Amino acid sequence: MEIPLEDLVQLAKEGHKESLEGLISRIQDRVYGLALRMLGNPADAEDAAQEILIKIITRLNSFRAESKFTSWAFRVATNHLLTTRKRRAEIRAMSFEEHVAWVEREIVADRPTLQPNIEWALVQQEARLLCIQSMLLCLSRPLRIAYILSDVFDLKSQEAAHVLDITPAAYRKRLARARKSLLTFLSNHCHFMNAENRCRCERVAPLAVRAGAIDPEKLVFTQHPCRSREKELPLDYLEQLDSLQRLAALFKSHPDYVAPNTYLETLRDLINKGRVVYFQ
Image 1 (cartoon, rainbow, N blue to C red):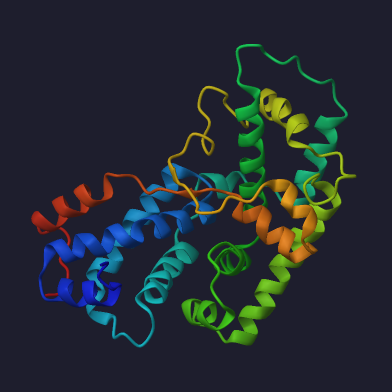
Image 2 (cartoon, rainbow, N blue to C red):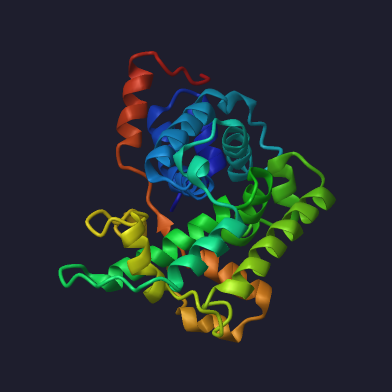
């Protein structure tokens, strides 16, 4: 039987290192997944997630069980992600308008020759995942985190508002603005949201390769380790949903990424060397 997170926290506070490691093992994937969706680059997300996990460890004494531990951990994570310096993908991110201009310009250009040695099915999948991530980066950080907490991690507005330390009304306004921006863009340009749109992954994939946005030899998202979901929904299932449900289903089609397996070893080493001190 799995030990409740709150019990692991209490044992960790009492100095049980195995409980501390168990706690980190249970939350690291969610912390890393949140960082990756916020920052858009696995290497940057790996660094940020490790920084967040260290903050969680060193601040365990401030957890008073007044909320779920996952909510408290998300608050530590979101505070870090909202205030950290801009990372590589954020610096390169386009606006919605720039995305439209790029897609329209490339689609009407000459179609590049498909190289026979490339697995184009995987490249098309990479193009879809990259596009989904790019859409998140078009949002400001406050809108981006509001959307991710709700429609990717399924937090209710009350809990998400607590995580962000704002009122539920303010949170709902941010979420509504994020959804409206994403829905407007995708409804007007994405084939998955509207079959009449010209932007299709099989058309964009070779263009993205030509532009250098995708390296067929190093697929960032398609080849990233991830957890299998109990129930994978086919993308044609989107057709059966209303617009907001379809929007959420599209972003949830991004895999549940697995955090690097080096986290526990690194944190254990930092603790043993006294570079990270947690409450005992």
